[in-house]
Length: 312
Length: 108
Image 1 (cartoon, rainbow over the protein chains, first blue to last red):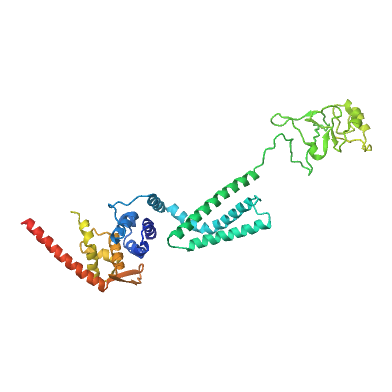
Image 2 (cartoon, chains in turn brown, cyan; image 1 turned 90 degrees about the vertical axis):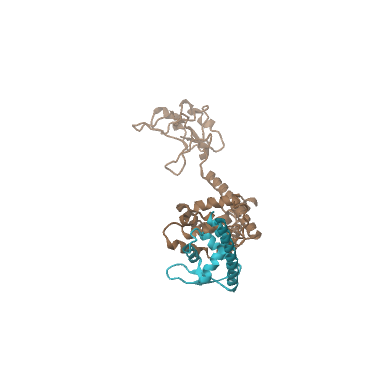
């Protein structure tokens, strides 16, 4: 322990001494004097700071000594744990760094609490969306920083101080909890939800989505009636309705994972009349020129604008 | 008998005596008490005693800048302190004489 840490530990141990400041007025200089005389750590020469504090208070004569034993309430225990932690190097540097984070926490706290109020006012969101919400956030940050600064500036003791400290604890706890809830909500929003019973969504090379597939053989021959399944063995089904097409049901219920799909442009009519002749083929060919059996497909020219077009 | 128990009763007088000799800062007083033979005097006890005597108005204090170390707060007796010292010394002298006589009787 450096003389400063030792002095701090003594101060902490005498936190409830009524005349602590008077008693410890020049403790720092005194300890520095002792430390300057020898390289031995202060704890080795003076004993633990708590015992030193006890002896000091006893010589000063203010504290009533109840049988020589100090009461060991929770406060004393916390103080002792704190003193123990402060004797531990990494914790000390961490504890010294913490105050630097305080202003940042004030800003965050103000923001979070303002957003909690905005949420209660009926606009739950993680960021302010409306001018009143922005105003609330600015006011919240300002109030939080002001509260933090005035709390820091006010020294001394007393019931007012204690009340302020309690208020700070409550405010910090509420802000911390709201921050946690907000982060969980944000995490949920970022996690993609698995879409149940959804058709396959693919990232296509073109800007349009994929709603039909045209398989080809190795030699370039277009294939028909190709059944596709995904990695789990489930039928591979697209979602043509989303793109303004529907599966042509003129020749009965088609198999939805048999490609290419017989698709018609969804214009509200059903294409039964126009496609009635096409039903001899199990599925329409993607290319009109490949096989002679394609005759029915060729009969349906785009010039028949009234009839739904066969889209494959 | 534990001499530290005895010391508690006369530490005020011991500190007053050291300061009556010449002014001193906290640790200087501790050192002089130890040099005088009061080995087991506790640093915290001396410091607490100094602060109490100061509060009681028996001591003056002044800060002296030091070249090689921290500033030192010197304590010295004022009139109240000197009166206190004189009265305590007298009490102690008579008390110790009584004790010495008592012990002498016991030894004979």
